[in-house]
Length: 278
Image (cartoon, rainbow, N blue to C red; front, side):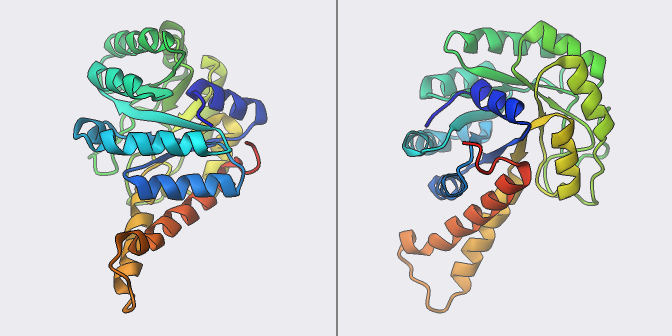
């Protein structure tokens, strides 16, 4: 069933667990995630990057994701990840997305507030919740990591914007970590206490399980997984390519890739505590 971001996050808040948010790129990744969610009776978020939306890949993937969510017996939110402009927000709202992330974290505080608040006002008309970000979560390829999210600044940001959840920088980054990350768990607790809304952990691929669990205990209610989805899909495809008896019929050929994504999703659903929470 298709639900809103605020609905799926609030349930996680009440149940003291985290909803895994999987970036999807094609029908096969959608299938793998939804199959895992239904098997474990778990709520999930499926989300797309603006790149896919802007290159029109999203035009084809979005209807498949919406159809999967409508058919699913578990709660599913379709979310726009890291929207950098209003055009992406407009487009996704028209297409039926039930969650929006407006990312102005690389901007000065006042501009981030203004752009995020504008997105919240727009999305409120349709009852769609908005995720914001304070403390820019960059890439593992950046020369250095930005300043970690300040609890007081986070509280002011939430107060001025009205976001339903907040992405934070606590030692996390997007991509494959070059060395094991170390999350600032005490900072998570301080931010959660100060701002009063559920928190979001970006860069969930590659963070050690014990740190993920500690972060959830401290207030993380949504964890993004993107790089691991890509890797699982690639590994499943490679397995199919290496099979000397492989079929070139695409629907059969893609089964190994779907299975690999499903396995990853099963593991992350169990890790975040979402199993059985639908």
